Amino acid sequence: MTTPHHGAGPTGPPQQFTLRPALPRDVREIRDLVAPYAATRILLAKELVGYYEAVQEFVVAVDASGTLVGCGALHVMWSDLAEVRTLAVHPAWRGRGVGGELLGDLLDRARRMQLRRVFCLTFEVPFFSAHGFRPIAGTPVTQEVYAELLRSHDDGVAEFLDLARVKPNTLGNTRMLADLDDLPTV
Image (cartoon, rainbow, N blue to C red; front, side):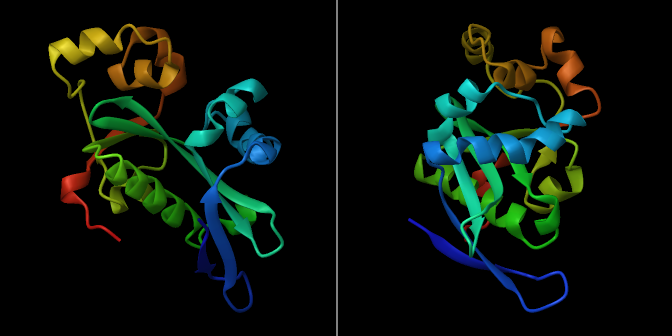
């Protein structure tokens, strides 16, 4: 399903972009979009195979010509919990609402999956705060769930748990959580 959206153009009228589920053919563009953010350690670098393995988690924004201008993923971590991952917007499209529309779509996806909470690890605290996320300390799960999550080999889960082995990845980032029951639906 595609949804047309309008973002403010840099010097002219609004430009349209469309959100849709990512396809395997988008993976190289997703990797290329993320690469500059990964080079500056804003996002985690991933191997190409990792993007293919997770392609079903991604939503992409494409402009009128079909060029990928943004992406984001929703990764389920537990029965009531998911993580927003790899939310990136092409620099030429930043400030035009693409990131907010992608995040809104991911949160709607989480609601459809009947999840209650969404986690993110980010440098973009004002952006996520504006969308209902709040910084967290500790790990807001029961001891039983914590013990189960410890079995995961996924770095995102380790970041949620605030484990020492991922501290180099998390330096300067803020761990944030949104309770979907507290957010307005679009």
